[in-house]
Length: 257
Image (cartoon, rainbow, N blue to C red; front, side, top):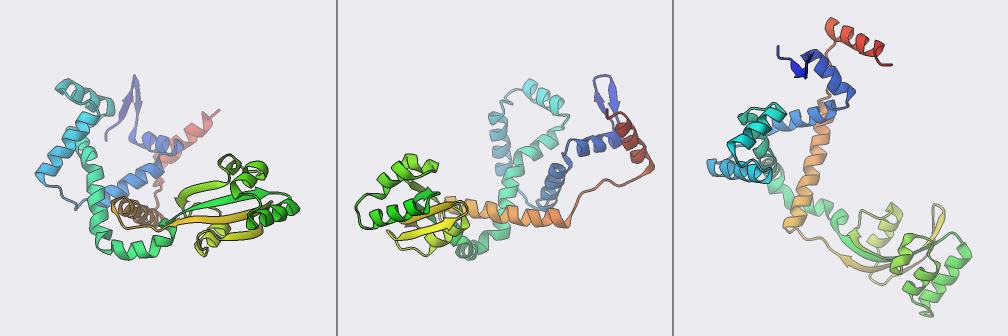
């Protein structure tokens, strides 16, 4: 069984496992193991593989045989492992496309309310009477929303005259997001109590999401991460107990202080 040598110190495989646990690296190992498992059957053409590896080497200044040897030595990797790392992200992207590409339109319709963006005006104060007075001023156009926000709003939105966005509709507080989702442009809401604040809200503009390349990438990433989280739950990682690991764990505990 292979061991790790750190200077003059030898670290056994069993000790290495315990160290990974102690450094909280097992969850990252779990994630990478599962990703590798599911992209095993994703193949690249020779051209894709060569171009991806070449770009990876250029981006990481691996431009000479000496630089390659230095990287392999530093990370204790083989050339095959380094090439697998260089092509991993492309294989993951191909896996996403193979898994969700054909249903992306249906998923887009499902997630569209979370992908829509809004520009809105917000004013908040802890004084109910002030909120009511400002609402009537804005409604009667006696004073602009921006001027009221700059003068009276007690949040950092005061610096922008209360204007926020464009931001995804999923970003604001859920209560605010719900109000915005049913608003027409320019609709001003009466002050509402939200936690310790009285909030005045107005939708300025709704920017509906479109299934373009950028949105498609965001959606594929979301679907992948959601799916991966489910796989992590289904495939928990743990250390198989045996006499050796219990003995080493005991020694680590004794030497902890």
